[in-house]
Image 1 (tube, helix red, strand yellow):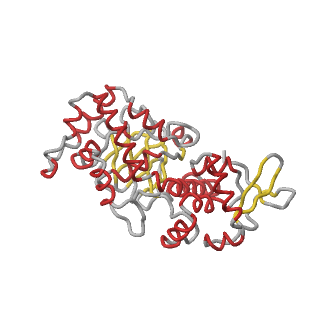
Image 2 (tube, helix red, strand yellow; image 1 turned 45 degrees about the vertical axis):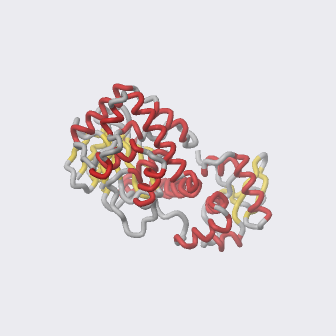
Length: 361
């Protein structure tokens, strides 16, 4: 059992965040049990991406270090606005050398390297460290970028849409039933009670929760992952599996919609269950406004979305035909405010010293 004591101040500061590199970390981590019904990135696909792009440092970390991962490689949300992969990669690449040395030394102490006979001809983790901590951080950033571009870039609009949908669901639950109910809804193995977050695990760790707690929903994680910084220089990070995106949407239906419309347009259409502007959609799906406008123009011509002007803003929403395609019914009586044209308008969503690193279920 991992128990994270959470002070009142830390509980009040608990927040949800979206981080591209956190999604990569969720599938790179070697201990992620397969959960029935979860759709993620298969282990074979991860291994193929690492081998095909010659990502030897990530491969070495994945094979040699078990149970933990260096925190600097998943810096979390480094901006308060739209998730920024380049900003996160820059933070990884410029990690101070003492931080890299400290975290890697802790990795070796808590999780001894395991020799892999099949990879002895390739450089190992210590080989990369011998080149210097700064070179190690830069290599980590370069390989993370290559892995992310290969594995996540094609599916990111859909993944991001699922993450945002999960955050909206948890926010509604917290608003109606309180933060305790929201924390208890994250995963069957995560329980909040008596001022602490308890995570079912083979590890026996008690963490002083004097720092903030940041929650990262993941559309690809098979189970939860927790990252604790014993120096309390950053928040405790908890990755949990996001809810399946969309009402009663099967994997086959999602694939079919994506094959017809393309992943970006199908994700935009899925996000138009409520009226939204181009700017809101761009932030929600991590696309440029011009790209969103381009896709919306095609959806408009196809009769799948409608638009209405409210003052200086133009709001888009799915048509009845699109609702049928998406497998949902038009919302009614949902408490949304209405414009003078009668269209619902929603405003823009405005440890212990020996336990650093990432721990999985």
